[in-house]
Length: 115
Image (cartoon, rainbow, N blue to C red; front, side, top):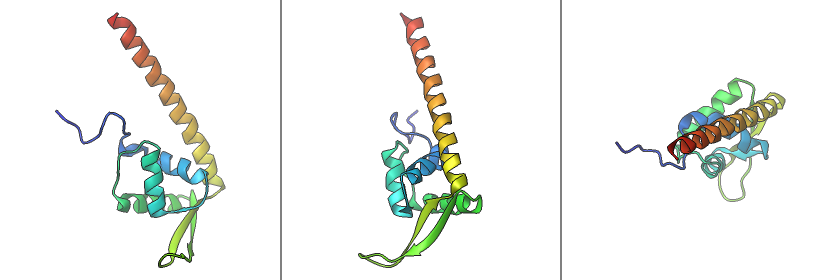
């Protein structure tokens, strides 16, 4: 059975952690964030899902936003991590690193058993 996810892409459940990590590098607007999370490994996602997540993160106190003028078009909402958002980004980075280590160990163990 073929999945809609490629082997190199992460599932959608990683959206919030990756958005925190993407925003840890600085302020951004929604469309730019959707591009960043794809660069970080999430499968291409609907931009509406990014905006829903941003609203959720803002509700949870992880991001703040403000309207900013754009030189190339209409004003756009720009998002930035709050203090709690930076803490969440650091926590997510640690959790993702631990997950990576567990996956590496599982793969190494599986390959070793096959030999």
